[in-house]
Amino acid sequence: MITLQSVITLAYYALTAGAAALLVYNFVKAKSWEREVLYLIVLVPFLLRVFRLK
Figure (cartoon, helix red, strand yellow):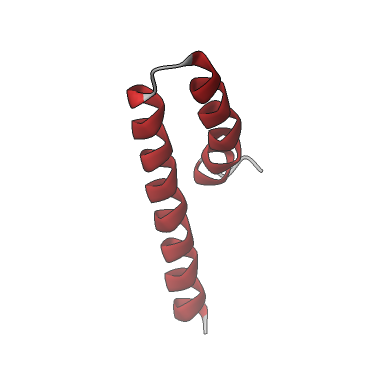
């Protein structure tokens, strides 16, 4: 049971890190500052999860 829980946790953090990486990529490619602010607002919860702060 512990192994399955570890695998699911690892998959969750990998998925979250992947989504954060895509958001960072889109942030870098954004042309307008409104889009950049939107990407930053969406990116914050993903980064908090990846760094296990919240």
